[in-house]
Image (cartoon, rainbow, N blue to C red; front, side, top):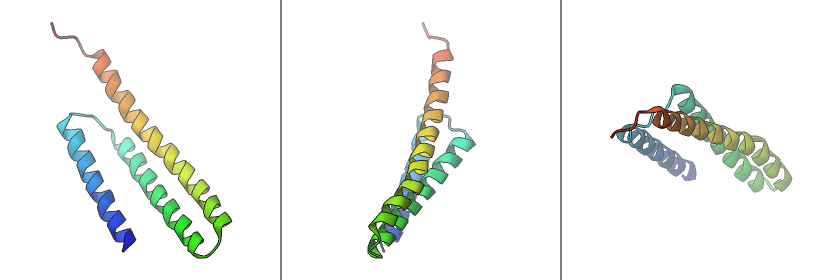
Amino acid sequence: MWWLVLGIVIGALGFWLVSWAKAHKVAVQWYEWLLGVIAIGLGALALQNYYAFLREMEPQAAMVMLALLGIPALALAIIAVGLAWWQNTKKVAGAPKKS
């Protein structure tokens, strides 16, 4: 049941993010979306493995899998957000000023 709720929350947040980006005219490239989706997938896999290993009474394996999957997920998420932010601030800085 927990994973169903998590999937619904991730889907709703994804829909909101796409709607917000379109409403505020934030340009996001396809590879930034792809990096974000991969980061969310790795993050969900890291959480699932963490809780599964804890239920199996293997706390050391839980921490190792959390680090092995969670750190790349966090890095990809930071890269995706950073790329989108950088592209949009570069466009704003290069735009002519209105008098």
